[in-house]
Length: 266
Ligand SMILES: C[S@@+](CC[C@H](N)C(=O)[O-])C[C@H]1O[C@@H](n2cnc3c(N)ncnc32)[C@H](O)[C@@H]1O
Image (cartoon, rainbow, N blue to C red; front, top):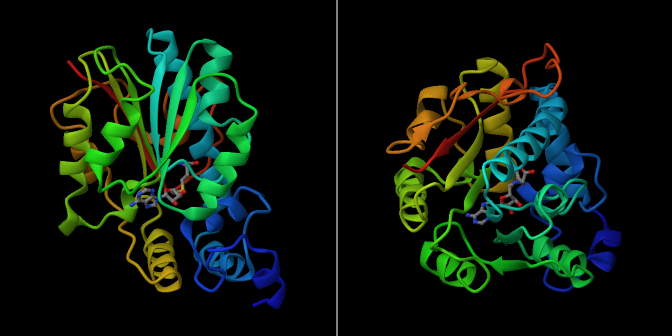
């Protein structure tokens, strides 16, 4: 690692421990990552060569899910686990489809916060960023209420984040708390690495990420991902490989390792 990284990193950014947001940025072809992140990202690629098409397909799912929700009349979004800004960020997709769309981003990584501040500084449309952990639902809901109207439907986006919360911390309960605060007609979109897609590769990827980052990631089965939608109306085609969720062109015949689905709150 890189004395260079030490020099160029914004103050307060840890360049010694790989971080999921920067690893993900590297897979997407971004430049906001350090040597430790690239090494960890390459270990996962070695275990799971489909990881790069997988993250691209995951971003494409996000775009389609947001456009779908706007088509259903939703113009407010709560995007938790935003990631380092890349092309087609949620506010750009939503506001292209409906200019009055409001987006609240949430992430717990200081580097995401730094980028989000820069990204949003020139944005006039109503968009904000909350520096919070997914587990702190009270803080998220309170902060989001400053921009979003909770009496109207909101699209909750939990895109490639729930694997960062282990079973014993009850990620399902966090999802229920968040959805419980939203109005009927709200939507939930979830994507999640699937331990039962490409089982050998994904088990190796789960271990490589856990070893590198110093905290455990939990890849889940399709059924386990389906449980996040309990109490909601899961929309067709259900929980499927992300590239197969309402594709706008024929999906590439690849395995991506990612499950995804969208549900409506009755
Ligand atoms: C794999 S990236 C996904 C980024 C984006 N949602 C996407 O799918 O393109 C996961 C993001 O979730 C954030 N994250 C992980 N655990 C979190 C937590 N407990 N609370 C808030 N954000 C978290 C990371 O910092 C990272 O930006």
